[in-house]
Amino acid sequence: MKNVYVVIPSYNEGETLRRTVESLLPCGYEIVVVDDGSREDPHGMLADLPIHYLRHPINLGQGAALQTGMDYAKAQGAEAVIHFDADGQHDKNDIPQFLAALEAGADVVIGSRFLRESDLAQVPKGKRLVLRCARIVNGVFTGMWLTDAHNGFRALGRKALEAIDLTENRMAHATEIMSQIRAAKLTVKEVPVTIRYTDYSQAKGQKWTNSLNILIDLILNKIM
Amino acid sequence: MSWIQVILIVGLVLMGFLAWLVLRNKLFGRLFFILQFVLGVVFVIWPDLSTRCANLIGIGRGTDFLLYLLILFVYFSGMCILAKFRQIERRQTLLIRQLALRGAVKFGGPKNVSL
Image (tube, rainbow over all chains, first blue to last red; front, top):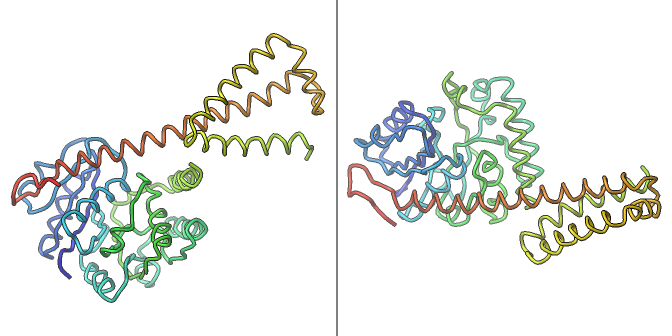
């Protein structure tokens, strides 16, 4: 597959962002870093790497950064966009199976930690419980019952790029994207992914209380 | 559940719906706020009126009647402000996105790949 754009939203990631980008470079994809208004502009830190660089002047949230990256990739003629975390949680070796699934006809491919026992074992216990609840909330709000509710590792084909337009700036975008996939009748495939939970990603990651915020965001988005 | 509770809950739901309407139909929102003002003035001029209204719908005291109305109005106003905030946030997002897209740079290639 040609014209594959890997979109990496980043907020105050610093050195970790650079390591993530460096690890992706040998794969030969176009890399789009969207800095979401970090305190220190990572521009200089990345300027020697062959990447596309965009920056929100102020912080909006991960959903907004992803959409900016997707708009950019779309304008550049991307055939596929991969959502990839800056914090090193995602494994670049999983990307080919996402692309293979797109080539096999899926419009959207979503990573899942719940398809293989070995991946599930990596997920901290508390997080598993939150994810199982989130799966139910997602199912109720979107009518799509995936095995993994909030997996940020995704691939979108051209048709999906045209159809998806995230308006949830913060984390509720993960559920919003499901609603839009369903509304546009896109075909979805799940592929197993391994998520590396490092101390860093754990500290940067979401607290379980934030899932309540996501729920409220979703309800608000439904009514206004 | 007494019927006044039913009325208040139905009212709250209606208020939420109204807040949503106001965004689409400005005139409606304006009329609502004018009504709020007029009612305030009326109840101040004729203090007994609130008690009579209260008795009409089975509430003992006029102050309680006004309190219930107040809850509805405060809730409504809050919803309006929230809706407005979300609308502004959405616009702000589009603005910031345009700025980011225009300032997009491709490192190690032609500078400023603008769209």
